[in-house]
Length: 144
View 1 (cartoon, rainbow, N blue to C red):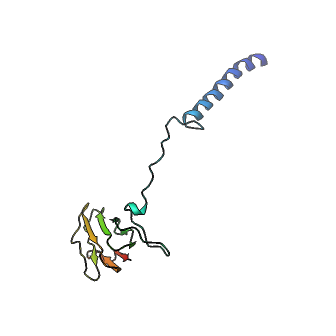
View 2 (spheres, rainbow, N blue to C red):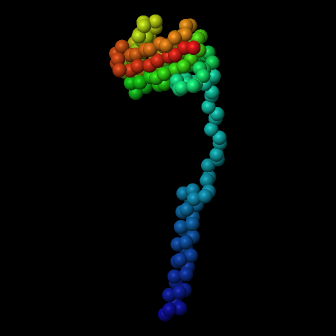
View 3 (tube, one colour):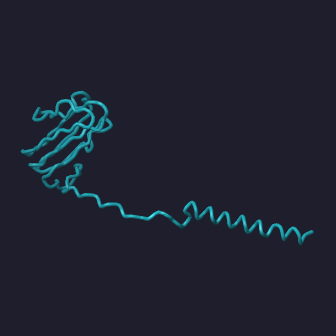
């Protein structure tokens, strides 16, 4: 009887081990069926991406810098740019916002979803701005 038991369990054990190994291979344990392509390189700040103000950071090259209005916030909230740089704000919120300088030097008016507003900073200084509809939304542009 013992001999018959061994004859029946050996093929089952082999089958179970084989199925487990196949399952591990299928779910990606060490083998990937997808081709790996490298992600494209991100542009540098001189290519137009916004750069947040950080201590000791040098300002970006004059160009166009983007600020996204999203989640009831300006992102980034602080910029350090050079004279001659154009800043473009993009409203990605489903509600209306404004981009209004505290000193009234610029005002976007009402920006609905996907609207944009651009302003070229021709003078150095610190320009604080806010949303007149949501006054707690604040941002700052430092122009060198």
